[in-house]
Length: 318
Image (cartoon, rainbow, N blue to C red):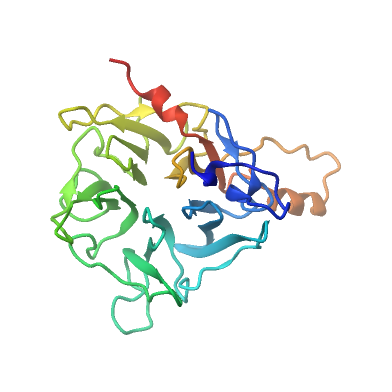
């Protein structure tokens, strides 16, 4: 196990990967309440290879997200601060390369030299350099089109999976794959059923070796609430198995998405819109209302994590 999987109490002056939180079990747990999970809507927790730096997004308006970062310095984690490439337009749906030097995200920032945002979101990337981060780069077609593209997820050999609302799909939003050959991305391939359907497929996380895919979607026969996390395993003939609901230990009536493996691949992070329950309004004050709204688990969306061993438990036995 890499050092980024070691858990110690926070603010000791020693290494505190993953904000010093105690590791979860096989049931999803709220991550870093009051530090990352707050009354805001947080999503896309993406940790860097050493587990001591993280980028995530916060919803700040209609179709607007800000990219925030935190890092461990001398055993203590900084307060969240805007990513240096957040800029005027922000971004969402981050994914980090295995070496931590290229960061993908989605934004409606202009593709050309103008001030107005685009009507659609594209996939962009920045590279880490000795001087910080490069300017954002749009990789263009076949990954991006004039429709929305969201949630990039890459394999260890460079293939990219993403959500697109381009014409020619099966449903309103579908999952596509572009293989990387000789440094060039090939024609986008529409994933077949059961991954895509006539409904709406949202965020999709591909396994580093393409052995499984976790999709945020809704299937009427076993849906727990809103969009759930489902997993499909690929067999020896490269066929995708039926989508399996990941269960009530992860999914809730509030909806789940933004699933992401930790860099040590021991934990699965995701966003859940769980609500703590009915508020007792006897003797309630405005102060109580403000406190409630500014706490996590208010139904708006928080970061959760679970032991990635749940993936092996869900795999069908031969």
